[in-house]
Length: 170
Image 1: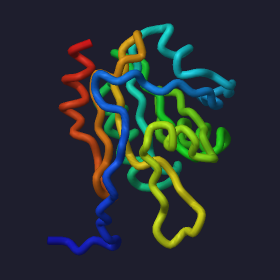
Image 2: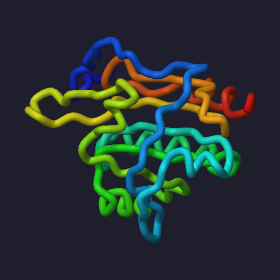
Image 3: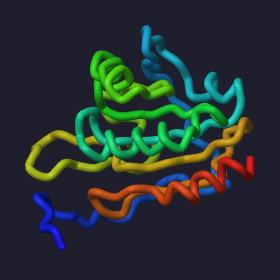
Image 4: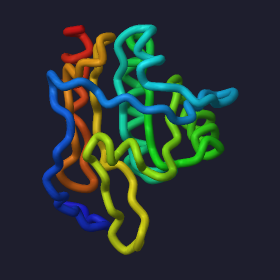
């Protein structure tokens, strides 16, 4: 077995929204390949259900893996997929271009949305720096969470087949 060049870290329990709960609404810059504008999650949901993907800061390998998997599975052809991290709109534009992401990404440098969702991850060895822990919420157009997954360790990745099952059930 290959030796990992990082430690797997157990994360504390969270009090995050679960299936059946109303998804907390928020307003943050929503970035696409061209520009960004302050947008509410509820406004995105006006167009139909959404997969909300919390990911580590752009450039971190887990963010790359997650977005590659989402791209390769073609989720954005079926449903609106939006990401969220502490990265700036400029970093998001680079990630979208470099990874060929066909999704929009919310920018939340102060990590306030992760606080609302109960999924703050204080980064080891980086005093005062936190980001959302990896998480996926499938939200219907009534803002009800139909599926919720939140990482219990770092790094950790969702069961993509389970997410697809939740998307198909909408």
